[in-house]
Length: 98
Picture: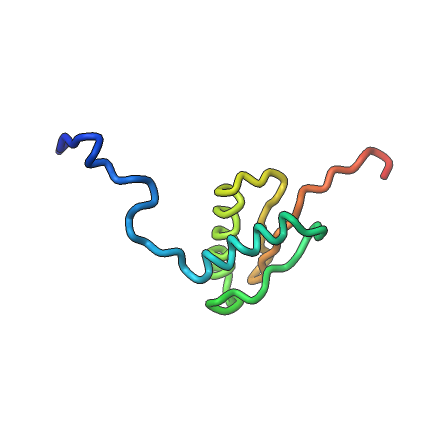
């Protein structure tokens, strides 16, 4: 079923009244701090909800970081996980022979 609406009735993007979660705010701050730092790779610790204790929690944390990287269009930064540990890294380009 379709219901016709006017352009004025179309909600603005992100206007659904959902507040940023503490983990979401932490992920955004972490990504922005990492982007301006000299670090090349780092483990992400200190999540407001606690550090991940299983792979499902680690996947959620990694996903939060990835979403913030995309939101700020930060090319060359990736998030990854190994078991319950979550990492963030900058792409390192090396010349042949280095």
